[in-house]
Length: 105
Image (cartoon, rainbow, N blue to C red):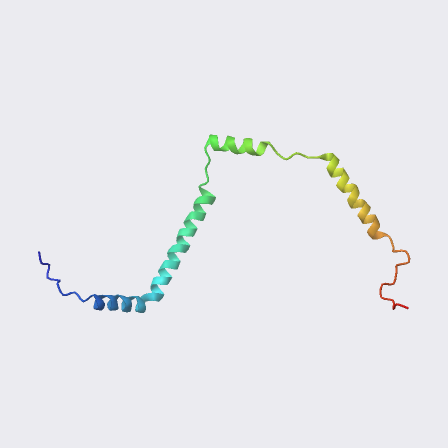
């Protein structure tokens, strides 16, 4: 079965394709960039404006967040007192500091 294309020059086809790409590379890249930006905008719009949860998903989220954080009041008071102690020590004037740059004699 002969289609009349028995003498296709592969190198000529490749060369023609590369010439086509070379001439239109800016438009191809611009189209690719524009399509990526539009797709990103569509995904963003969907995540912001069409974010609907089913009742089961809402209940699962509420139960997961409902456990909360445990507050250890004793540890908190200990840290506050330590902070106050450090603040007092910082406010005090150093008494007779040793001269660390003195010459040895």
